[in-house]
Image (cartoon, rainbow, N blue to C red; front, side):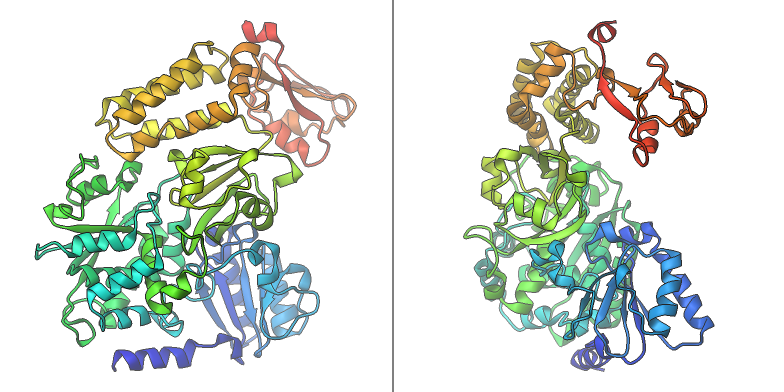
Length: 627
């Protein structure tokens, strides 16, 4: 069967699941869904339907991005609109089978939204929900709607049509198309994709390589993982297009071993590509030969840097080297190499499928297209989002994210991972693009966004991110290896109440020295969280050092826990749960926390806040702090 026949068969079979007369149940089964219990829900639905002897089709799909609502299932019945249900428990799954699949009770109280030409009473259109209305799903267009383990689902959605177009073009024409799209690398630096391809393709070397960088390691970032788990063929198609364009006959996907589901689905997808003639010799009857391998990384953050990644593939310790020469001249095994990240390659697939004109309908003049972000922290709608470049931080946090949890005050957003910066409220109207974020002291990075509220201590945030990069430093550069350790010691002292006024000057001087003396981007940008928090939240540093207090009531050394006698009901829950036996009191009488025994683990506050709100953080008395 020819490849065109395979495409035709796929479209006929999977082109429109919404017209199926047999009930179709789609279960979100990326890591977030599985962690929330999706596989248990799936088993219960299968068991119930089998018990009732009802014909059905159940499909494993990826993540639609609404991580706060997982597990999510979609039910399509008798050609009716698809109904998306969120936060599904085992009990709700049984109820949906009996009330909706068997009967016709939609159970709108469990529904998130619907997709279809008809409107459903009591259930809004899915893409009219505030969390999705402001998004433009291009890269994520298939996530949550196709089975990532079935290549036919991807083909039914015009998958590999971009590659079919590419192999009928000259490499220079493909590069021009990518250039017209103004696609910039989505891994953080924003380097023009076309230029990287052009530099490598122009080399007279016969052997060239393409590498997909899937070594996502930023705290709070999971954009690449979700895409690999939910739509792996969109990345693989981009790799094929890039390899054909630069003349590479071998490629690697560098993915960290901490992503077991992504690796599993990548391996399945590679086997399917081989079966369909998309790998090997004379691909689809052309003169293009290409093989693709997976290299599992050990989880070193520094291996996200291109030259360290190359060293790791070669079996060496993952450490960066001096540039030039750049990888496009001398990369893997000393040969010209293009390294693009996951989202960049998925964008290439989209550009070749839909054209550069379609791609450039979104974005700003110098930052075209859309960008995926993981939106986490103290925001109501956590998950994976995709918005046009140029959207403001305020629009993302309040329109897409739904605002701050418990309607508390916004304090800062950390964007760009450990290399990024903490942006305060005064910059909320900053457009999200490569250049605007840089003027605010941050970088876009790969796309992690951590939202912080009034209860966040910015000194401790700086300490946390510096601790991360200090542990992840490869140790090659003295400024990075020793400088970050000294900065971390200073920040730790400040959060422990041991800070000195001269520490602020020393932190600034060390930051400049580390930035100037480090070899790779990890060291050069490692101090950004410290610099931005010092710049925008200097008063918090001074409060810790000069006043002996943590304004956010977050740092343990500056606070005590106390129980309000007026609010305490003497339920004994906090007393029984305290790991330090620091709480005393009789049943139905007000309790008391012994400060000298309290380890400030937060267990008591967490338990009490659900019902009585009788326990609170208060500033620690100065004389106690000095002791």
